[in-house]
Length: 244
Image 1 (spheres, rainbow, N blue to C red):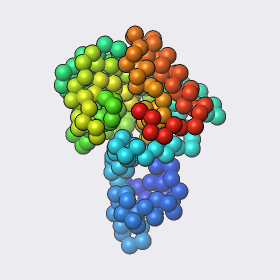
Image 2 (cartoon, helix red, strand yellow; image 1 turned 135 degrees about the vertical axis):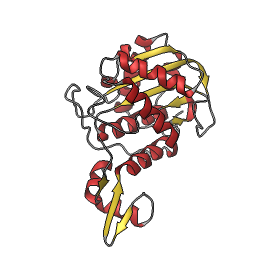
Image 3 (cartoon, rainbow, N blue to C red; image 1 turned 45 degrees about the vertical axis):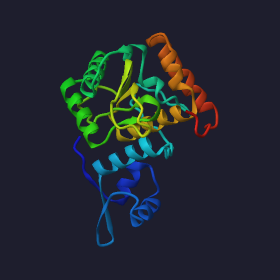
Image 4 (cartoon, helix red, strand yellow; image 1 turned 120 degrees about the vertical axis):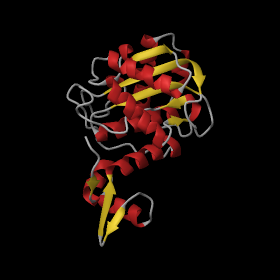
């Protein structure tokens, strides 16, 4: 799916914001856009990068009101978002890699093993392009790599892979300058689901013990159980601000 230019209403729908709120943000210069007379125009690529940076590095998390899910994921009033998209088979608790490129290669292999990826090389190149725009590494040794573009022809269905390095590396310039050892590879077919998953993972890192639990788990089965446990707790409780 190629990126496209959006008008105010389409951009608001993409970001799940009220159009008037988005217009006010544009007038204040808080969001990338151009203007033609009274019309505001937004590049989808710019909006995607803006939202990702806001979530990844400013921890300004605004959960979306609704989750647009692929047909294989059930919806409930407060659905688990991350848990249904991964499985023990999409988790590697002993991943190797000493460089960013090696880690992205190993994550691509893990994605290939799900059977949901059409072209591994396309995914790898999109992951590299995204990291060139700005690192997906966040605080506390976590990174959220994802393709620069989402395309229905890249994946059979949306999924998330989780990798835990045996030895942390400098994956990117994380805000706290930490090395990275936990990776959530986000592979979503739909823009709204992608934004929802980004938000949910950041909320989990901020408000639950998921980072420690993933590091202390014995293997993929325990890591998957930790994800399900922490996400269930997150959905059942009010956020604990500042939890690390």
